[in-house]
Amino acid sequence: MASIKDIGRFFIFIVVGLGTIIVGSFMIRGTMHMWDNPEKTDDEKKD
Image (cartoon, rainbow, N blue to C red; front, side, top):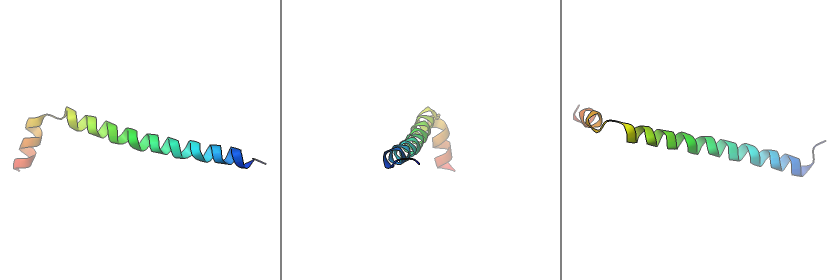
């Protein structure tokens, strides 16, 4: 049977992993928006 320390360590590992995935996805989305062509975004605003 797993001890409370092992369960806590596993739970923290899952929480940190999910947090890393969420932060990474936001960072990738931000860099993609930075790489977008400014003319393209201006054309989208005109429509």
